[in-house]
Length: 342
Image 1 (cartoon, rainbow, N blue to C red):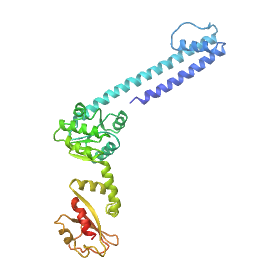
Image 2: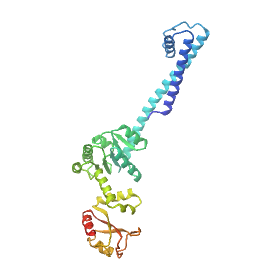
Image 3: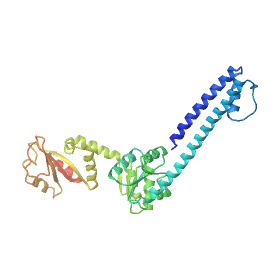
Image 4: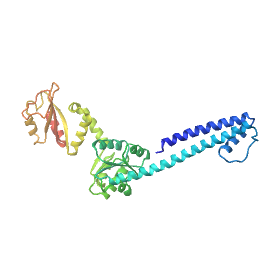
């Protein structure tokens, strides 16, 4: 990043130099010189070339005018040159200092997460990690994105995430997790493979777009694989088939995270409406939960009047108009739904 003060100085100097040149040209033209001769005189005078006067400068007024041009023009030109040198040197020094500070920061970081890719997914991931207070290092090849991340105070590395040297610089041997969220499935596979070779115990979470790549990522050493399109489809399906689940948790983002966390353990939530023909009608919570060998848990009941009963008692009787929010193993959800809608 260039010094803004130096840039401002350059602007002021260039403005003064330009105005000085225009006034000097007009002055020589008024003295009877042609525009070309006036321009030539101004250039050789300000820049100190000293080829000689184009026309004799014999009047006191013209001599005073030329002397003023020399002082003002040369001073403004030197001012612009000094500001330019300051901008270049300070910018380079700041870059070197910043790179050194960044390198030291990464070397001192341990138990961190390495985020490969600072695109849309990577940026959202970084926000979540920062919110949770987790240390992380960002790897990307896009300098513009990295500049933005650096301005926000993040540790960044410009390089290829599938390169051993880049991952070593990022501290892969000290990292607790590795997130491959690059836009290309192939890049994520190579990054995952390299990370697993360098650290056999690190947790690797990789992103992919197709199920065929999912298998490749697991074979490459990924601990978990995320398919954003599948997650989006699952989210939409829940909103369509179980819209009232949203009313139980005010924060829909928290509910979405709950669904994803449950899926890790093979669990999920289902909403079961109870009408006059439901086989669960008049049964107790205990009876319904025991029917699934303990695998079904009624976590809440939405009554007909809209009241939400969380963690209902085992003896609570199910009434018509109730909606049961049941936690169960994912493979049992279809069976439970079929039984409830007979």
